[in-house]
Structure formats: C-alpha cells, structure tokens
Amino acid sequence: MTWWILWIYRHCLSGIRVLGHIAFDGTKLKANASVRQTRDRDGLEKEIERIKEQMRQMIQSSAKIDALEDQKYPEGDGSEVAEELRRKEYRLKKLQEAMEGLEREKLKKINVTDPESRLMKDSRKVIRPSYNGQIAVDEKEQVIVAADVSQNTTDHASELRPLVEQVERNLGALPKEGSADAGYSSYDNLEYAEVKGLDIYMPDNFLESLDKKEENEKRYHKSNFLYGEMRDTYICPEGKELKRWAEQKREGKPSLLLYRGESCRECAVKERFTTRGGADSESRWPGATFGGDEG
Image (tube, rainbow, N blue to C red; front, side):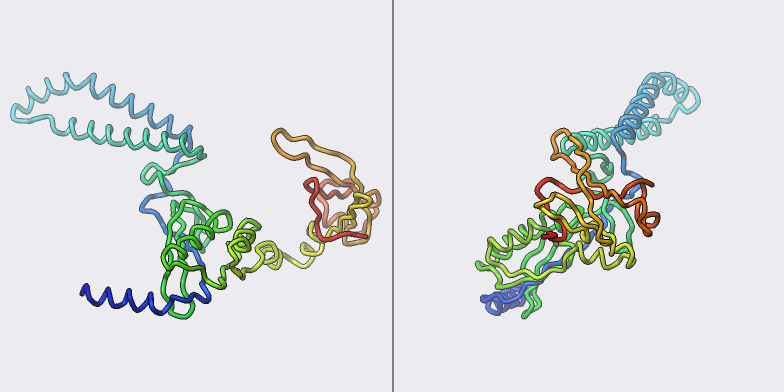
C-alpha cells in the first residue's frame, strides 16, 4: 500500500509543478461539544463556586457516611462517594481550564468541553462550537495543495494569507491566479494578494449583501449618498444636500461625523427611510469617501 501512496504523491507533484489556478474555500467543522456547555465569565464563576461548595460538603460529611456504611454495610468500601468526588474534581478542573482560556484569549464565552472551539454560524445559520476548515485546490489536477484549521469565525479576516503561504511552502511556487467566495472579500486580503503578485478573483461581499436587500433599501443605502469633498457635504438619492452638524468624540477611536439634511422634514419618502423622526442623517469616518464625489 505504501508504494501506491508514494506513486500518487509523486504524480501529483509532477502534475502541478507549474501552478495555474488555485481555488480557496472554507467550511465550518462542528466540534465534538455541545453548545449547552458554553459559558461566559459569570456562568463559569457561579459553577466553580457551586462545585467547590458541593465538594466541601461531601468531604465534611465523608466521615459520617463512612461510619454509617460500616454499620449498615460492613463489606462496603464507600466507592460511590469516592467516584462522585472524582467526577466533581474532574468537572472543576475543566471549568478552571476554561476560565484560564477565557482570560488568556480575552473571550466573552468559551466552551467547557472543548475550550479551543469557537461559536460559529454554519451554512444552515445554526450557531454551535466549531472550527473553520480551509483548503486550497489546484484547478487542473483537482488536488488539495494546502489545508488548515483555525479558530477564526470568518474567512475575510486572516484566512487567505496562511493558505497562500502554505501553497508556496508545499510546492515551492505561487499560483498565477486564484478564486474565492465573497467570504474572503476584504481590503486586507486584496492588498496581500497584490503584494504577492497573485491575481485573485472574489465577489465583493458588500455588493453581494446589498443584492439581497429590497430595492428601496438598496436605493437609500449609505453607498448611494455622494460625498463632496470641496463642500464637505453629502447628496442623498433624492438630490438633497446634507451638511455636517455634529462630531462625536470617542475614546481610542476616530471621531464620528454626523450629517443632516435641512429639507428632510418635507421629503415624501422621509417616513419610510428614516428612524429618528427628524432630519435625515448620514455618518462617515474622517477622510473616507462613500459613493464618489459631487464635483
């Protein structure tokens, strides 16, 4: 059997020495753990204290239990109590390990059964403890040339780079081009691909999510508000001007600039597309431009 595996390995390498197109994809892999075993800090602290108290009471009453068992069951060995105590000790250890992981990783929640897993939403929109599996496949030979598993809940944050680097390590070369779904769509991934000289094709995640909205939502999405740098104003889809009216300071973050239209109260579509009851407003990060320029 070994010679057959070696033959396949050599055949694959010989067939993909010159890389053409590589497809990248990811999928959620369910962890061997129940979502009911997921705890936040408060839940961990409460259960740890409860088990400690239970163990304390068990230890305090162990002498009385042993005495009673010796009287009623001279041949008994008290194994039931000892076994229950061992289960409590094991659970306490798992809870303490989970607490350490929660603090070390600065997480909001952690699974006690599998602390390394993370709560992720799968293709059926079910949230449960999972891992993020990643693969890279050669288009011509249909062979997996790189594979990885991570704790990241999404692909757009940092999943493309390790796959590309692994392809380069495994085969000694980079592919000429690659493709990925909208889950990988991010500025960081596009910038990394450009630096590596990799032509990457992927749908724009923003546009894909926008396509799923109703037509009215699309029309009044913030991307359709045109920013004019010269006047520092926005133009809404109805052609009305929005001027800056406030700036919100935020500690450790850029200020948030707010824009308001003076004629929004008389607008025929105001009730359908605003929520504050007053003037419409649009916000942006300093230095950013949405949708273009009014000229």
